[in-house]
Length: 359
Ligand SMILES: C[S@@+](CC[C@H](N)C(=O)[O-])C[C@H]1O[C@@H](n2cnc3c(N)ncnc32)[C@H](O)[C@@H]1O
Image 1 (tube, rainbow, N blue to C red):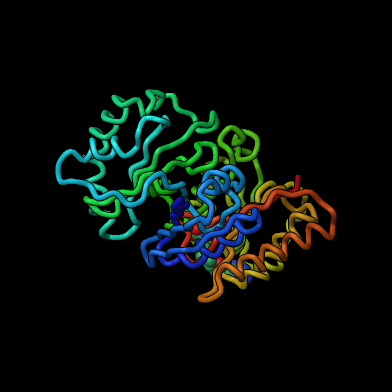
Image 2 (cartoon, rainbow, N blue to C red):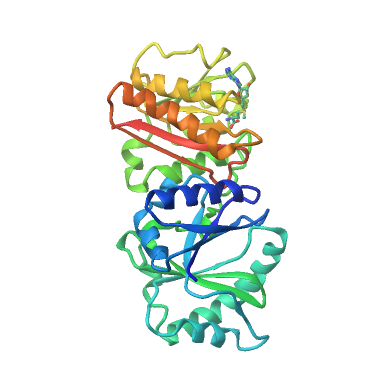
């Protein structure tokens, strides 16, 4: 049986499963779900084997909100011997296909963290073994995802059990398990800073940073205190209007790049239409935030918006779809073309991050 394995934040398996099942059905591909509760793992067992690769080709990973990474299985669960694990893996792959890269993965749990030490040790001999068998190509050092090709995934459920599979390089995350490991900048006033850092990395292609994320731009940060998001804008050389009744970090105010206005983020509007970025991390009703963001974009008060939508305790997938629909309806009413993507990013918790712009 062919399955698609999906990685998500532990605790969000239900949302991740509901989403893949729904979006696969839109493509007339069906299967049943096996959720690994609180392990951040979902198995979507397909009725038709060929649908595994077909779905990976058809459905952009960027369109899945709750999935960080995915792959199609090549094998069922393999029981590994205590010795000669490399040989056992190489043998089970055969020599029909070649892969450009290898991802050693494990459940995103405390046990999984223990497993990662084991995986790090095994990675070197496994790579060597796979290269020798010509299963892994030698491209690794200059490997570029955009050039296509396939990536081999080895998901270790324990030191004795592995599932092998592959993803398409141009439609999968470049990070192991879809998790970018970002360094917390010591000068940033809050850990939230990593959310906006990850959001820019994820949503804005690096080759467009010079035009879309660059110094001299004006930005507005709604719900800015103490300034973790503002920090990300300031460090990219932008001039920021920070809106929050709470205090902003002194270190940010001293840069001279920040104007702080103590007021309601739902009431503030810029005097001039020279704002490029609107970012918003207000803890408010997501429907209200969604409406506000679409109004800013439609009225030309900003060019691009990056914002969080808080998730409810229950019905999270349904709620986020409704919030996004509010934005889509507003854009459709004005007959504008737009880009709208949402993702439950690694540094997000009970919220998803959304990027929107008119094109
Ligand atoms: C999660 S914190 C923001 C953290 C900030 N992004 C950072 O990185 O430091 C949410 C903030 O939204 C502010 N907030 C909530 N509702 C607001 C409103 N209606 N207008 C302005 N600020 C609001 C709160 O005062 C709080 O400081």
